[in-house]
Image 1 (tube, helix red, strand yellow):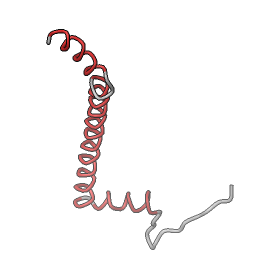
Image 2 (cartoon, helix red, strand yellow):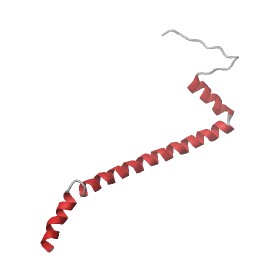
Image 3 (cartoon, helix red, strand yellow):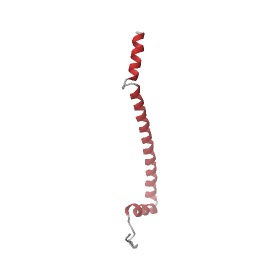
Image 4 (spheres, rainbow, N blue to C red):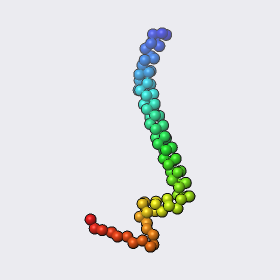
Length: 82
């Protein structure tokens, strides 16, 4: 029985479904944790931006100008050829 255990245990540990699979899964888990942390930071940043947009008209104007290219009715836009 001891001889069988001495032969079987290393085979089971070193087969593709053993220790290498465990290491691959651990690496994947670490990557998922890193992705989750990045997403948490994005969510926090977006919550701050939402708070600013709801309470600060200047922030709304800034976003409208920068991202949407909007202007006020009283403004004139000059475009120059390069």
